[in-house]
Amino acid sequence: MKKVIAMMMAAVMVFSIAACGSKTEQPAEAEAPAASEVPSDSEAPGGTEQEEAPEAASGELTKVGVAFMKSDPFMVPLYDGMKEACDANGIELIAYYADNDIEKQISQVDDLLQQEIDGLIVMPVDFEGITPALEAADKAGVPVVSVDAECAKSELTIAYIASDNYAAGYACGENVVNTLESAKIIALTHPEIKCTIDRYEGFKAAVAGREGFEIIAEQPCSGLMDKGMTVMDNMIQAYPDFDVVFCINDGSSQGAISSLEAANRLEGVQVYAVDGQQTNADLIKDKKLTGEAAQQPFEMGKGAVELLMKNAKGEPYEYENLLEINFLTIENVEGYEGF
Image 1 (cartoon, one colour):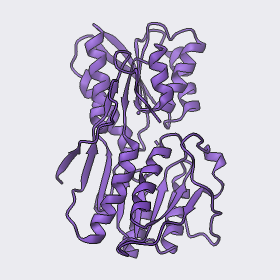
Image 2 (cartoon, rainbow, N blue to C red; image 1 turned 135 degrees about the horizontal axis):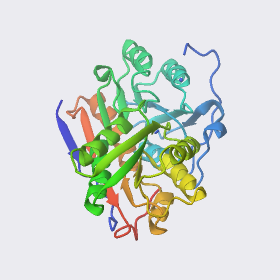
Image 3 (spheres, rainbow, N blue to C red; image 1 turned 135 degrees about the vertical axis):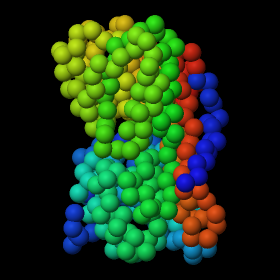
Image 4 (cartoon, one colour; image 1 turned 90 degrees about the horizontal axis):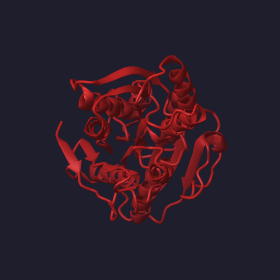
């Protein structure tokens, strides 16, 4: 597979995971989340959004289904990018949110296939567990693009588009070794998702073999704020001496920072994350977060639809499409506009 690094930089760069059996009832429709208001997992009744698009321009790709892993701030620009591409090309977009439940996500994909979509975008809750849904799409002859994370059975997808997650983790680790003489490191991980696995692998590669730098503990947190807080509470009790906390996404980093603050342990500890939420940019400004690898979710969503369009038209495209990250610190965060 040939790798292409997509050069999609934001205009201001002065300076961030993420469903079994068929269903007999159609989930209720809901409005798409506004950029300023994102429904929580529990606020997405039926876990679906459906919007009618303008009249189809080409007829080659008319209806696209999206199976998101959950509903959170990252999904807003990701969805908006998909919607812009669909609206511009007369494509109907139907989006489901799985609330981090792989069985629910599999069921939602089945619902989408029953609605006779001709393209599917999947953001897998579990990169291995999503396989039955991919097999169902393959049987139905529906092409699949994986977004944000590659699926284990990549041969069942036509392409995937994501941030360069390995590079994101590496940038965080590189900053650690460049700013400290030594460090005891704790990692909050999420081994069910390929993108977060890649982030941690990149981070470990950056600190590996560096004298004085040691990862003393790692613990999964599902990329969630509340679990991140709980894991960090446990780490504080188990490991009284540490200097760095690496978090695989913004939600877990926000939970970790809250825990460290509550224990009066944040001072002197460098915290890192991957995503790019405005909340984390503000945490950098407040000197609570040291570094952030910021993603480009709008471009990611738009690119996913464009890949399906190219496939429908028989145009050439690459299987692997990686977007650059932007590494933020106190020195360049001013002016950054997150999601």
